[in-house]
Amino acid sequence: MTNVLYDVPGPRARRLSLVFSIVGALVILGGLAWIVWFLAQPRVNAGGVEVPGVFDPSRLDILLDLALWRLIWRGLLATLQMAAVAAVFALLLGVILSMARTARSPFVRVPAIVVVEFFRGMPVLLMMLFVLLVFSTGSYWAGVVALTLYNGAVIGEALRAGIAALPRGQRESGLAIGLTPLQVRFEIEFPQAFRQMLPIIIAQLVVLLKDTSLAFIIGYNELLNEGLRRGPTTFGASYLFTLFFVVWAVYLAVNLLLSTVARIVARRTAAGGRAGRKGRKAQRVIAQLGGAGVSGATAAGAEAEDPH
Image 1 (cartoon, rainbow, N blue to C red):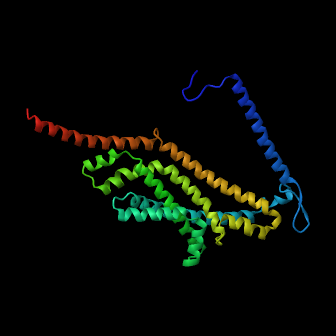
Image 2 (cartoon, rainbow, N blue to C red):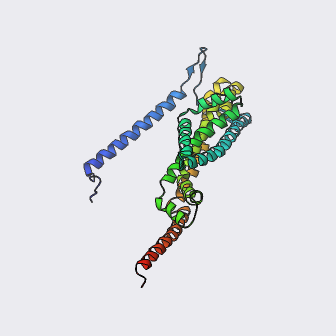
Image 3 (cartoon, rainbow, N blue to C red):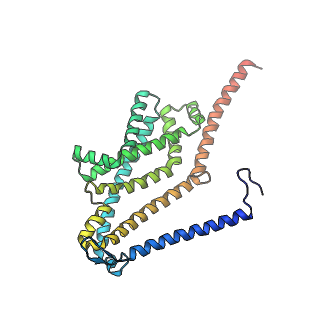
């Protein structure tokens, strides 16, 4: 069997690849085993008192305490509230910026480019601190505004790229059947660009959710603040690693859930999915309408040249 991109490995190369794979897997497993062993060893804290390892049952008993899960739920709810409001505003801002970035008038397009590049290059935490200190909005709205500005700029750039990637003939066909440029943008170009960029947008919303942890710095009682600041104060510093593990597991579960949604959306919007079939049907209708207009114009020109 031959391949135009690379040479098919022979028996010796396959054996070497298998050996390297086994050795690499053993090294990884050995590293993980060493980490578990190291964390399980007792150690002496700053006060000179020996404390048990992080896997000792005495450091895991709070997992059965309902007060811990009420604290975690309170932090998770605050995180989701900030993320949900910021996500809605970021989507609206992204749509507005994408329309402004693709406008024909330079008086609209150039300021939009400046705004997008400015907020994309600004650290989210710095924006949170700026909004909090200058406008005195409180920690919640400082986080919402900063997350909206940054992620709205990123989403707007993604939508602009989706619009720019569409075939030029679709716009021309829409104009040929009598639609205004604004109607072409909202009825033909933007729905397709949004559908194509939807997995990227959902992935950016996952980033938005994780960035809510930065509100810990400005004093918002989100999941990280509740779990790693109030938790050790309530249950004791000896449970810090347990609380860290719980907070990490909750973040991981929520982000994996959103990532799963992104993969499902990506499959449904792929070429073979239902959304893809609808998109191709819309493109065929537009092409037929536009083609009919072009064919009519061609026939009229031929009739003018040869009336018989």
